[in-house]
Image (cartoon, rainbow, N blue to C red; front, side, top):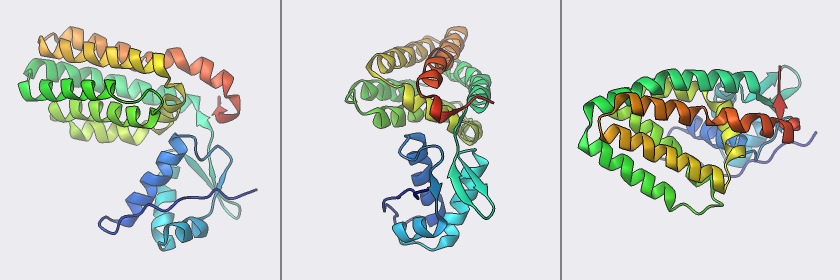
Length: 229
């Protein structure tokens, strides 16, 4: 089995381990590293010009997120997308973010509303074929909501469980889907701006249930990427 190649991209101004983790995590989520591909600790370290210790730490973190499986005496392999983990992550996100938007709508911070509107405008300007850029802005939008509610730790909890969900979201993003997601973001922001807590919560729940519409078709069309157990 061929070992996956990993490009350089490590900054000297930041702790190495988290950078290695983010780089590998991003490549798995964006389907650049596919299920079944083997990741070699020594080869990743060589490709990134780092020692093996931060790579080992990154592999452990990826394993905790369910993105890789470490098999003794065999190696570390990218996992398939777990449908069960996707559903669990969606449930956790909805439970947390429904309350988050209610809190933001209650506070109606002008600064937060202006920032969220600015982000929605930025989302609209992303080229239609740049899925990665849109999803980065989408994540920023949700992280900003949590921060505006004073619940940044809650977003950290979400980040710890949503990796498999992110893999599906990357596969599901197309022009029509992006337009629909941005429209949903706008409805969330306008409900917040009007102080409509129930409306903001309802809009967020609808938004986070979007994956339920796309998951069956993606799992069927890309069956080789999915674990349905």
